[in-house]
Length: 311
Image (cartoon, rainbow, N blue to C red; front, top):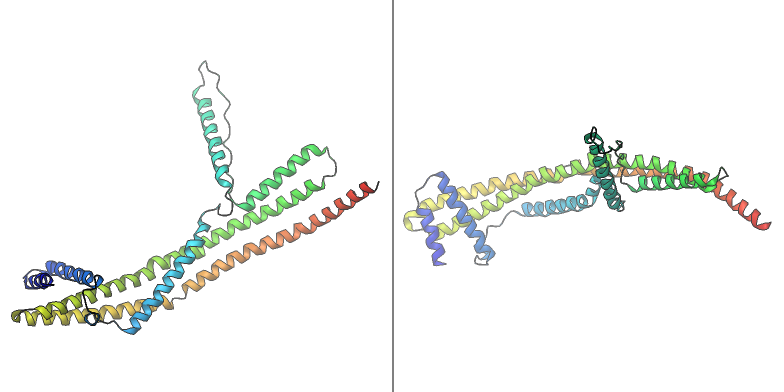
């Protein structure tokens, strides 16, 4: 403790410029924070901030946590394949195909005019969307083509049902891409912007209050331990620190109120729900339409099956 008093007194007695004064104040506030963290400062020696300020701090913390919690989950909309984990294997397969096509085309170009036979150039495989609706549509299309190639022109009700399913999921897949783009533009980006601007500005203002409060309490300690010749200067430093804390607290209160009253997050959340509603409406309408036709095919196939069993 005695060493701390001597250090504070030494800092206070230095006749230095503004830059050095800022350094000395910063060092004093850092030492004050360390002493508080170690429990070396009595609670009554820590300046109490206004209750309004503390209540606003709690509210802003809750808002910030809510923003992070939702953003952490909805961030998946930035990745197309969030509902289709099989895309990892498909991507590896496509990469291998792409590399193979690249090597073939390189050989086709560079082996011309040599004794080595040059292969014919090949077109690179078109990239496919990696979503579950796209994958379901592709799977149903491929299954329908496989059945059609072996049906010999017979009435293939399963093939027809697969074609209906594939056509339906083509529409749903397009709606999925539109939904994701809308969520990214109208929810994710502005939601993140709120995190990175207004909330962070309020957090920085709070940090300024914390530093100012530490500087004030450090100045009070300096006054408490000041020599008679330093009493007046130390008292002025306490008054200046008090004025600075009041000013910074008022600024932080204003900024925190602005963040909490901002209607933008509610509008952003509404855009998220609206994009999801549009997608699910398209999906429901499309599936309802194709399911009616598939139901007719199912009833017809069931009737034919029973009729064949009766004979």
